[in-house]
Image (cartoon, rainbow, N blue to C red):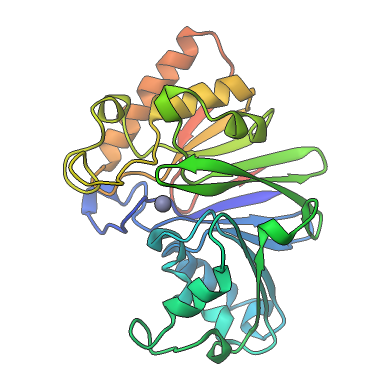
Length: 292
Ligand SMILES: [Zn+2]
């Protein structure tokens, strides 16, 4: 299995010069099985850049297939979708999955409503697009050699979906957003991440920001409904509790520059080393490719 980060930023894309080491695009992660079958985790702005990279291959000739797994449909997880160029090429096959929110197809259709978009309708995109509700699926989703499980996770006033992808005994777990209510790790999240080779877990807040109810400014304490997120420390705790092998801090706050992210990761590394744990840690950075 191969993994590549195309978008790692939470809430809002950023072009700040001091944040481009980590990257400014909203969530999108490419996953390939050993036969090159493609699964995409979330459709944030990073999806535009992934789409461009696909044009040199079968997706540029109308012979490509893509499975998109959405964690939920907040803007930052779907805003790249209308800009995914392979979706406009006839012959390509898109399969989109999501849950928690009913009427997923209506939501994606609504995003293209002429009030918001000149595309008007999914039917105008060209590729064959199927939208599927996870609730209607029995058992795992299978894409090529990937078996995909999912779990419903707490996310503030709404829930969202976490995914686990497995191939030949290797596993990747993706939690773009999750709130550990009252500081107690979400048991569904711990279970989903159990023994994962790689865990991608949000770290929108520092532990201090979470303790005081958020970060000042965007989605800060004054904004109702701004919660639904977790912290660096909680991501580490969950990875340790689940026995994951490597953790990537993901969904970086749009105000957070590279230097601050690196310092926060270093602090977590020191904590894990002091505990004598073998967990590997890093920040998710756009352009990073990992082989599992
Ligand atoms: Zn959200």
